[in-house]
Length: 140
Image (cartoon, rainbow, N blue to C red; front, side, top):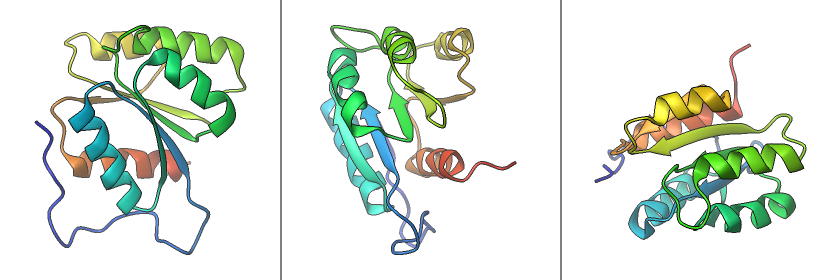
């Protein structure tokens, strides 16, 4: 179960101050995917969604997102396989990948892929938004 953000919380980025950053959500669970799309969209991000790794590979080539939120347990092609194929076939510079998964081995899989950010399911919307904001505005 995913918790909704509390009313009155601060959201980033501020609308009208910068172009909307594109985020690709790769999630097969309809409820989780819709919630992520709604909350990220309301926070000012341009959100596109894929239902599986194959769909994500097609979208990522044309959509050119700056952040990928990837579930590991996907049909047709797993999230880790998607990341491997995407990295082998695309310019991945300046794109952040975040694993969003309920798998017990998510942190280990992320580490083998060289991914530092992992959000465990169930997650809090505040944590998701904060992580995406960190990707958008990394601390140097």
